[in-house]
Image (cartoon, rainbow, N blue to C red):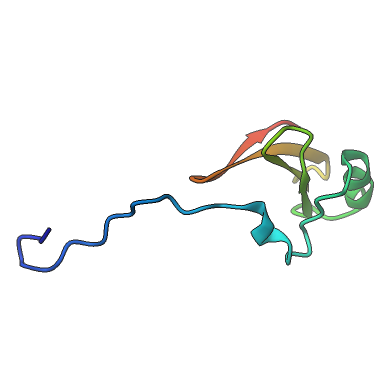
Length: 91
């Protein structure tokens, strides 16, 4: 395929990229074995914006535990797929 100006068309992606949590293992905020209770305790006195990502109890999901602007610890489900990541606020 070619564009009107005779340039080659960009390559067609035949297989979707994989988005695997394993790529996160080097990040200090990734704590896959941490429980929800332990994450809440760790973040209890941290400033807004502090967070950890951990394994969720839901299959093929991660959990984001974070401190919001009101200094409240909240939670969100992180859905993982070949398309990327999506958040569902749980708090």
